[in-house]
Length: 447
Image (cartoon, rainbow, N blue to C red; front, side, top):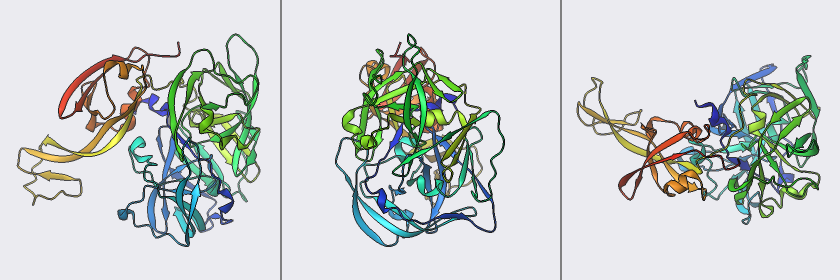
């Protein structure tokens, strides 16, 4: 996997007005276990792992920035039986109106030796809130406070493992290389006090209070004018920042000189300044200056201890990765499956014409037709290299740098847009039934 994939800019942005509906239910370790270890996928800096809901396995994002548990993108094949349902409306980040949802109570969540009884969740009925196409795998939901509150949770982004510990028996190890910070909570969300240095010409370290947001794949968000000195640097460009529950979020993208988290200093992190119209609900907590996202968190081994209102961090294997952004200007999404003809090197005979378990149909002894992933350009940033080359929204990507796109995962392709400036990108795309070839070089718009 391309290492720069992990800094893909895509934010999951949710802020609920209905957090008071969260139940007082608990997750717990069973069979006298003191720990449950879980492996996860790291996609666009986001932690994705499976949880069974009422016996049905679903993929969840672990998001410290949400209180309530969410479900969405459920189709008839998912067959999740939800209990005790009532309709509600939710408001989140984005400039559009609130969305319709169903509040369901009394559900059972399970994974490994962990059980969560009598769990509440919100099912989003608006199918336009689609994270799956942007991550390349089916995402069914988001979970945060409801599970973090009941364990000491240790996250190793390098090994892609989470350990959930029983807080009653967990003993914090002496760690000279770690820093531990007090957490403040507002509406079930954790906040940390850190420092930022906006410009290289100034030694001024600005103290800021940031939401710890493992569900936002950016490094930092800062709210303009939330502090007298918090203003965008001279070099910035307008960009799409992410998808919120209430619509798209836009704003300014830039670099700042440094981020100081205790004794740790991160040089030249990327930062986003969201438009004020998109974050009116996020500004309900007046002391908040922004968010600290997963592009920062992934550089550490992180331990959440909600019971004692603490977080501990230690340098991880990704600490020295440079901060980068998508210099192509291309927002690429999953576009379903396509039937691809391939040379058949097996000795398997002709099938009855139906796809087997691997979605393969062998029509003769020389070729087989296999269902492969397809990707399309969803959006283009104006005046970006991809835009100026002539690419268009809706173009289906056939090849990238001479390799068929269907041979690659979505995050692998997007990772190429995060490589060094002046890296050459060659794309073959299909548009209106015809193939077109384009070439461009990645360009840093913040120089």
